[in-house]
Image (cartoon, rainbow, N blue to C red):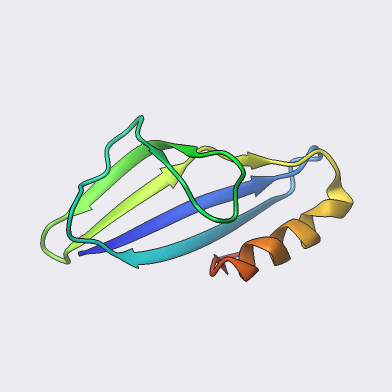
Length: 90
């Protein structure tokens, strides 16, 4: 089963960038409220919602936004995510 994770980076000025990471899983079905860890973060992020599609065999989750305080840091923040195998969607 594929696990699709989306997270939105939001700056103080409300600029937004959506990023995605995908995994193959076979052991646990994520649920709302569960926290997930990734090498891109210091602390786990909370799962806000989960969509399960048994026909196409995937689970899609949205995480809490990653808020940054400085607009100038958004590009370096995105580059850091890319180093941890995240892909930019917009």
